[in-house]
Length: 219
Image (cartoon, rainbow, N blue to C red; front, side, top):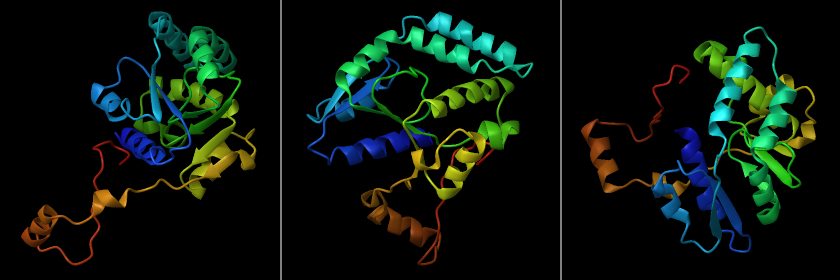
């Protein structure tokens, strides 16, 4: 998915910052291929986060969905329950990290005693809710609200995204939403021999746009 590509690109960029140490918090479900890319690098430390209460967490999600059906969004309840379920995560983060970057929403703890940065990639539940299920819409509405409410900083990939965030979450301070365009590793896009063969085969012009995307409805 796009967020996975984003994560790899960001971490590969961090590799070049040799004067900063990074911790990567992962669950046991993360593919071993991802772990192998970074565990041998001295700049990175892999920390596994165990979810000991996943069944209670699943039950609580259905509670949120139930109330969400009648337009009651349990933002504060979600805040307290999430913090309680992830006390060990809070301890680990505050022991190891000065700044915590969430590469999407924050679903782990909203009362960390360190700086937190959120990377929202879209607000599809607000802008195009017809493209996702009612379950996703309700859960996203609560999780995104708390993520925005308790983050130190939020990253927007464009000025338009920043405007969307400020309109959706009116409590946000514009100074706390920073526009940072998503980077591109130019080495990945250098023309190779195989590329030249494809260009010749399909008689492509000297300049053209290649747009690969997932087969999701909104793309």
